[in-house]
Image (cartoon, rainbow, N blue to C red; front, side, top):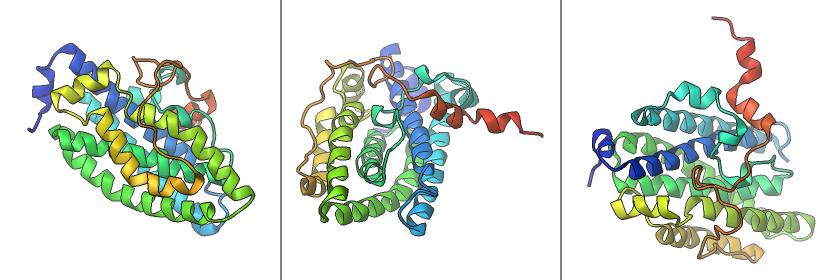
Length: 264
């Protein structure tokens, strides 16, 4: 069933609030993921890797802007969302709160965080929310490039031995649980949307993610968790853990320094 913006406004306040939380969380996560990718423009192991991360950063910033714009339907000002919020208000997923310390963590972020974001967008697309349909189609086309690169990098590092393999295993272990919890928390807000048919249930999302990633993750002895644990610090308002990104990254996401130099 196709859902229009006006149709969603006719839903209960709880449904509208839950859907806004979902879209804002995806937008903020893509914004922060773009920051984390951009950090590797000059730090990648190869020139080609640096160019690829730069391209992916641009994609993520573009996706975030499209998602922020969609929140106009909920009475938000997209400019204010992008440029006027404090770090504590960001709904970005927990694994991006801090810089990615090495190339192995970058690879894990492409495969796990970026892969889970793509799956969450697919869930919205299947739910039929009309104002996001065309936008999500464009995003998913670009995400195919991200996942192809991420899986190739992952396989190369995972099949090796020594420090590279160990760092990748460490990155996967740190990132996998928190990412799945943010994508498919199974809390009241998420399941309210699933019951309404606007998104996929948490159990379905986790199953689909496992089907895609487990053959890759098993190379480092990992698998997608079948449940999300919310008992270890959960903020239902933002749909993520109780922490937040460090201020320096949010200043960059807001464009504080560059905006001070902007002249029309």
